[in-house]
Image 1 (spheres, rainbow, N blue to C red):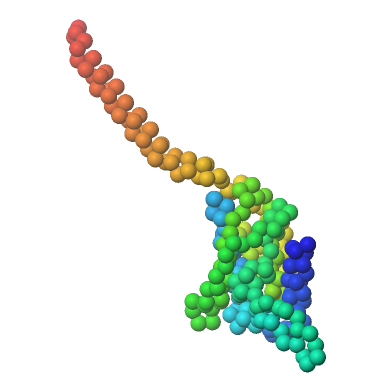
Image 2: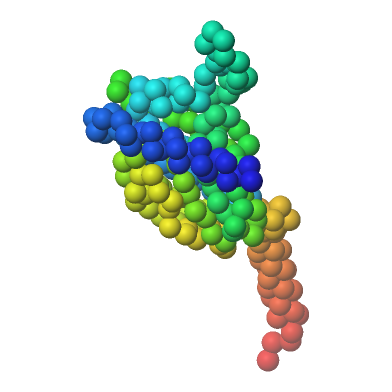
Length: 216
């Protein structure tokens, strides 16, 4: 039920944006990048024009509303900016939502640059498919997926719309497997060194045996 209410709120926010003048959402300049690591952790960068982002987030950051004379005040807590932004995106993985665990707002690095919300979290190690939704925008934008196996997938999202089903399979590993993979190169080098040392000793013994044999 809570997730359904979130989807409804996100959709309403997108509808409000769609009703704005065309020049307003032309300035969205949305870019989304989702980068995975082998342990299932991810970094999600959602970038927009900073002025546009400030205006779009304002309705979700308002504090308690004042009631008009004779009316009863309706309590409404001001949302923390980072949590409010997390509520504007959806990572739908294998039939359930995966919520980012943290978020930080990165200001533009250059003049006329983009502001970026950087979200971090973890995917289930057996994750197979992902569908993505960003509820603040209207214009189409690119979604870049950087898989843990170094494959890169770029999806074009039609603004206020879900992504298609994106393959996440066969890229994550358990901590034990990762530990073994890290140790494998060292073990391989040690094995090669031991093999080379054994061959060298065998060669020396063979040479000595040949010297002890009587010459005909």
